[in-house]
Image 1 (spheres, rainbow over the protein chains, first blue to last red):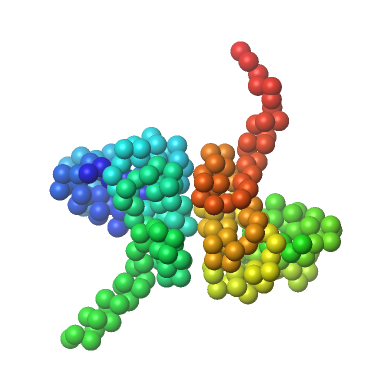
Image 2 (image 1 turned 120 degrees about the vertical axis):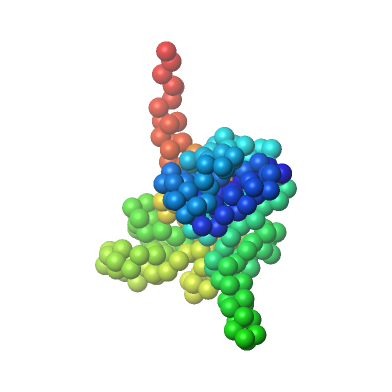
Length: 139
Length: 133
């Protein structure tokens, strides 16, 4: 599977490294080139990473095209900005027709609104809180 | 006409001022408190401080009876989300965006925004006919 990941923070770099290790074709995009070296210094995305790293704005259709969005099977939007993730994910889904698209949205209300519009969203705020409460009650 | 303007930068400020002068009802939304305070000294109580992408905040602006919403922040993604929320959640009839990246004109329209205007594109067009080598 060919996957494009927008945002090379902790989550983005982790997904990139894991998917690369399991044999997928990975392209990771970030507008800040330092994010790639930061990931490397955390021990993620080290020298054995076989995927491509692209410096650019993931909400720019031309950048996405250069990164190979046109024949991608999967697309993950995990920048720090909810709106950037929403926009990048919609471009991937509706303009480039990428079959599987996931967007991280911290704001529960916005996540819910876009989920209803057919975007596959993950809301770490709600899911994190739920998980924490569950763990707390188990012990 | 009741118009909501999202983004109180230079464009949002002059737009709101012009709309008011033409006799329209305007609400100007600005996220930054200090900027909102300044805008209020210029334009009066039409300024509201808040995030124009948030459903709860927008519902306090009388958006249900707005005839149009214009998003003119400097960030294309913020303009897109504000207008999609306005269109899909609040059924605002006319949504107009400022876009910075010219290729977002077509993308915004494909994603449900009624009108998208790129200053970059307008300026490029003003250079027409293109200088040929």
